[in-house]
Length: 478
Image (cartoon, rainbow, N blue to C red; front, side, top):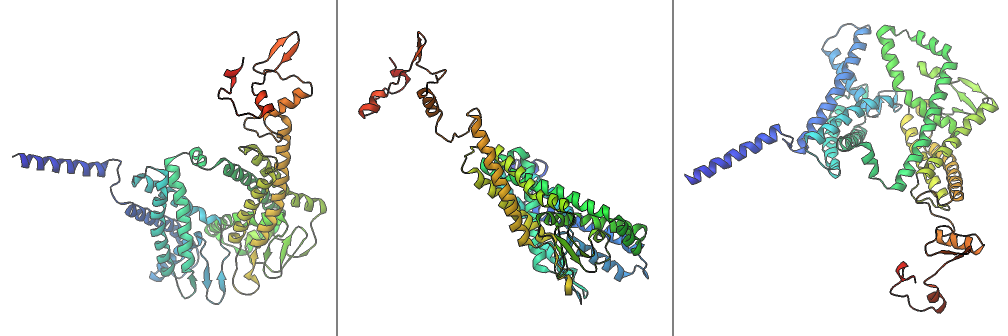
């Protein structure tokens, strides 16, 4: 009877623990299974959204009917758009490789993977930040497999997506977006930023300030150029005649290419500019372009040969990277943990180098080829943007950080944690006293008829060179 009672109690405890896992906060399934479910859900939702858009365009376009082949084509195009959202290039039969892809479309899978990462952390029972990497890996690995399967399934005689690029790009995007979402589910942004060292935070802050100035300048410049060529934009749009539904889809496509236009405008402000075909250039010193595709946004580009822009406008545009570097250096100097006069320019140039690396990466993703022939080179040159951006922003940030720290040193030791360039505060006070300037608030000083007497309990040791006294300190004062 005792044995049966113990067995019944053990079975009851097992049922209670399993029920707690099913209905409680604990993980009901392994983390790998949770990540696979989240990956399939994120990919499925993205494909469903794009399928509705493609289906709307298919219905609005003139066609012979929506048969089985039409539905297969709609699904294939939706899968291709989903891969394009992960920046996967295509090879078109008879046209060549298509690599000029919209950066704005990456926001759709990025947002879905962000939510998927949060769900994996919560449903998987991840309670520590150091374990978020396992959750992100559990999400990214099956997501890359889904992307590879869709790349194989969406291949046709006309278009073939790149299988290696589909697997690698989807894995990196899922690892980054899912990892950030999972980390945000466990801690606020302030705590996550606090994991970095103070020096790294200051460099990242300066880089962020410089990139913010360049992004705003690029957006304003691209919008101003489009506004100046609004007539050409309207003419191209009317020439296409897309209709009501087609006009909406065309507007979405142009909005997806807005980040590309901003990156191109940033490369224009840096000086190298960008190209739209072999042997073409658009820069502050002048432009030379050939015939352009019938895309309304491209109407903002000056076709043919044009001389340089007005001198005042050219100077203002080329001065923007230096202004961005000045702001980055100022933010770096203000956020530095222990600013050192001679090291401030070095960290300022490091801020510019990091900014150049980010700009070069964005330029590589914002450009690409549009088939064979003269349109193989479209967009800015990544290495030129990286090198020129690092030099212009880095030099300005280095000079600004050095000047800001020098001014802070001139103010005095009022700023907490500030390293003085000439030694500790006692040496400063000793120098002032040797010049006849009294040191206020000195412990051990007494006022005797207007004369201030200072007592140094270690004066004898400094003169005789003897060993330090065991009672060294303020308690040894007479």
